[in-house]
Length: 285
Image 1 (cartoon, one colour):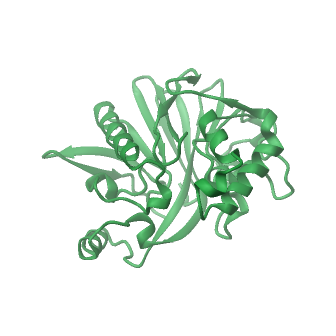
Image 2: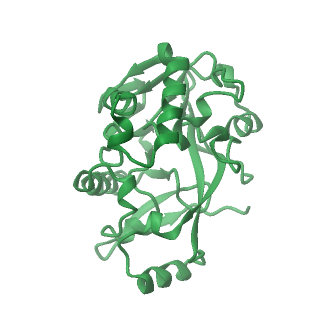
């Protein structure tokens, strides 16, 4: 393990949590409706900073033995502190040309930015790319700028990516099996077509929740919400979080939260006295 990638097994599947970099967010971006005293207390109890959220960007790679799947691609060069995912996959023994399926859980820049190289060519030259049609339609709509004010650069990037490799895209639906053992989970709310992905083998599972839950503290405090600009439908967002958490507990699944500090952003959900708690996998950095 380095801070760049973390390798683990799910049954017969070889999996890697891949580090793309990080971004510093204002504390209110992740915790918009929280009493500051309560928030600071919770953050200090875990030795996390109280003035910002240093969010890792973690994606999931799965080698099933027959297929090589990458779930989300990081931000690419969208931020100066990101763009390391493809290189880190190589360091972990992966091959960009071997990836045959890239899964895009939604079209925010930190999930699609790594689809293109700096020269505009596809990073994963032999991969089919899949997302939900509702997500595609939302970001390519003529009135997208009016529907999501403040996301002008994100919309421009979505157009660039979709226009460049649109012929590689296919659409998926909830419960679709992308390849044997890799399944789409509905996770609407963050964006209209946001989804999660479950990889299962030999009775073991990992659920990549993407942005269905932003931070480990949201597990223990489900009423704490991120800034409204990052929630398309609040009621649906909260229902999604509850359902995915219940599913993870029932299956004792590993969970990978794209923004969960610290990297590798991986752990399990335990229920203790009726309260859900995040139990991270901690590794030396």
